[in-house]
Amino acid sequence: ESVLTQSPGTLSLSPGERATLSCRASQSVSGSYIAWYQQKHGQAPRLLIYGASSRATGIPDRFSGSGSGTDFTLTITRLEPEDFAVYYCQQYSSSWRTFGQGTKVEIK
Amino acid sequence: EVQLVQSGAEVKKPGESLKISCKGSGYSFTTYWIGWVRQMPGKGLEWMGVIYPGDSDTTYSPSFQGQVTISADKSISTAYLQWNSLKASDSAMYYCARHISGVHRGAADYWGQGTLVSVSS
Image (cartoon, rainbow over all chains, first blue to last red):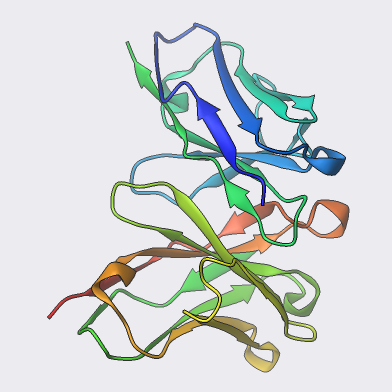
């Protein structure tokens, strides 16, 4: 089972700044089977990225994903007010999926 | 429009049984995996397991194997998550989610609104 470690735990940024979130796997994630989700307080998660770098339907192009092997990154190029939320990575290369512990992006 | 509508909040006592539901609409229910995710208060997401409603093929996370049962009734486009004997530690929000078809079917593109389960004596 691949354990996913996200860093940092909290990212304090201002609107308009760039956010870089990291997700590191304890084992290589085959097929780059990594997804990223956004969760706002009191809401269900929303899929942003799948396959490490493919944007889900309707996701703005300021969100991008990259990486392979054990190191993956979610980048938000210019933070909008609605982007302040918690972000989770997830691997689905094994029969059972696992999530990282989350990164909170908060307003500085 | 794809929708997953979950059953309402539940308040139960330890030792009681419970079955919560997730009704899909707006797509072919039998051809997409449906997963369940737990979120304990103030905590992160935990993947519990998935079911393929077409043939009820099910996979559980080792952490939840034997603790819950995932099932589906394709005749009414509904997936279920069931407990035989609840514990206080089962108190959480539970989400169902439809998975993408094809090779990236591990990623979930549509989510239910969540069902809050509270277990207390």
